[in-house]
Image 1 (spheres, rainbow, N blue to C red):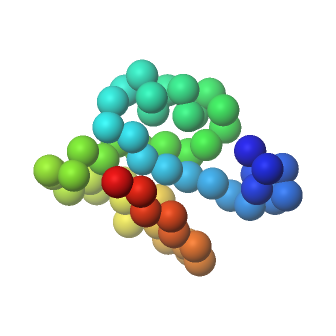
Image 2 (cartoon, rainbow, N blue to C red):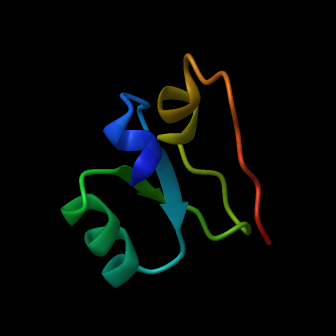
Length: 56
């Protein structure tokens, strides 16, 4: 939230629809990513990315 308030564009992925909806409600561009199938939305979501946080 702090970075968003400083003008950063924040997007992310989640495994389950309820979490995706929660993140979208908070104003984050979000798509599904389960790790076991490719998601055609990811290239567009990552376009222009300068910083990436990866968490397992």
